Image 1 (cartoon, rainbow over the protein chains, first blue to last red):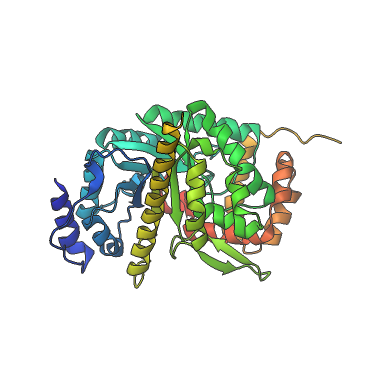
Image 2: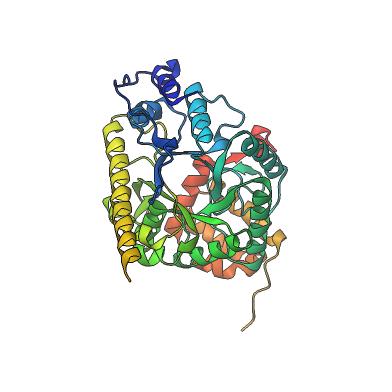
Length: 335
Length: 77
């Protein structure tokens, strides 16, 4: 299916409610232009809810979404709307699809049948679609009676490291592409925050894995533990970063009255993240993708805000790319 | 000063299961922390437990209550 077919499907799908009609003269998706990018590609994390389809349709229609991230395990065992299936297939065909698992739980200490099944399904997934890389989340979310929860931090012990390396090796054995881990937003304490970067580096080293650096997760830890965000960023193995995540979140108040920043993916992107982004790109020479995340079901009355965030993100990356290209040209011409 | 015993895979697995249980069953972060710190099985994890802030345990309680699913209730392995 070509780009117009995908866009028609996105526009006309009966299960996505009222969507804006396509404009005439759509320039199309730029994912297969063959243009040599000297900057990371900018894209979206796919959600299955109708309000995501409505809010993003103008971005897909104008060809602004250069890469798509898909949490493939969200789609296992459930019905995926046809428009979402077609988007995934389209970006796969153009080698601009990223995989981002949410339920493997790579740091669960006890190996479970559930994880064996997960890897088997992942094997089928990567045989069916052309993922550029596959990532998962740092932390554990399953143990004992729980087959699902939220990713939580782990003690930094040699046993934890060996378990994590084993799980990443299994992930790498299953995937024909690079595998990586995303830094965690939630932390229990100061030492947890300070040690995550080094621990991730040690986990990723044997498989030469990549780091998916989530800037809002950094922002959460910076706010919650009063740490300078830049010094926190510098505590991560930045040479390993292949992908950046950018999103918004929310504030809650703990019983002691302290505000806690949460990675809820339901708000606009904090201005600070846009300010940090060019500096982060300067320091991450391998970064190839920048993805904006927002949870499905949170777009009501926020479509314009989301589209503005996406366009600001893309503009920031483009401006950075122009500057980087210009600097590179100048250095090439120096004697 | 005595070194804590090394953490084994079994200790870590039991600790992760216990932590999720406590976060799901209790609403009191101070009580959860006291209970974890008083349990001799978690001596190898003393440094990790000493770092935990109750306000963040409060968030973890909410996370597990929101997203946690038990195999015994859903029939999932």
